[in-house]
Length: 381
Image: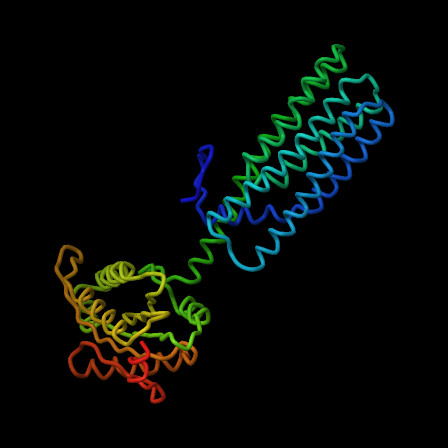
């Protein structure tokens, strides 16, 4: 699980977390506008009121804004290369948080300095600066709610205190207005965050359903084709594809009903999932037909070992609707060099071996491409 600071009482999965953090790279325009706003208002306040504090706040805000823009550029480039791990996403979140807090500190510093003076025109600009910054954070960084809430507090709390020190009715009313806005901003952050989680979770679930068989939970034909396209193509590596169906599955359906047949398929899917690993992908092609893809192996013996494991695992009895049921397996497999592997060809060869062994009463057989020199492969391994 991803590293966590404060506890989040929401079901934010690791995949949702990574997607939300990736979106922090796309706030270029608001960050640029805020950096220019800090510089413009700070310089105007310095020209109108004097005081080195305004220049220091401008310098801090400008440097932090530029650093944040460069950080976003680097993050966008990273996003185009590939998907981040949970640890990488956590590091990007931390970097964005640090830059966001520095910008928020410059806003809080500048606004506080403005409200300590009595110049109404400059205070009007300070009010606009504070409202604009908090509104931007509420809408664009709400996907990371703790970052957004902390940034708003850093920017607004000092300014609210300095406004209250004005002492007159107008400043008290402005203080109340700031506090009301602060509460509304916090509510908006959590609302936007909840909405983002729901939308992303729905999208991820739709993508998952498009690539998985709903009965067994295994991947489907679409996912198999995608996995095959992503094969690591190295001359020294082999790819194995195993096709099998169940012997006696029709008898189970005829004797116990289709509900029991579905239960059996679901149980088989569960056992196949236990055999999966990053290098082994189990797929339901339809009916009682399955495929297991070994992405990268170094020797034919690895394929033989997995075929035996599949056979022994699936032949063990199942308890379906309170009744013990056993089925046989007819499994055929083929092997090819990763650089030459073609999905349709490998399915055809593995199917041929599966049909041949089914006529012989079940078990395991293989069909190799005519171009594959098994002796050369074994000696190289």
